Amino acid sequence: MTGVFHNVTLVNIYATSGAERRREREQFFSSELSYLLQGIPTSLLVAGDFNSDLTHADTTGHQNYSRTLQELIRGLELVDMWETFHGRATYTHYKS
Image (cartoon, rainbow, N blue to C red):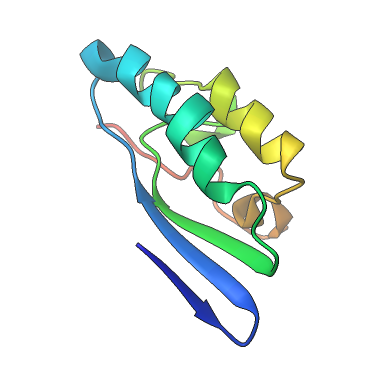
């Protein structure tokens, strides 16, 4: 889903979940999502459920790190807002 409001483009993402679908998720990040986000002429806000971790501090459970997503974020010069909060909790995902 995408929308534009006051020159800000909002993109809501849901990437497939599960370890067995990792290859499909990485393909989504490297091709479809990359294509969708390139060339957006306004400020960009990307939200949703990526079903991937960007750092070890993102989960207490099994690490589901996505180098492809990290490279996409870096390449588009996006900022993980969770990382900008200094008083935040340690993890974004808890596994009990």
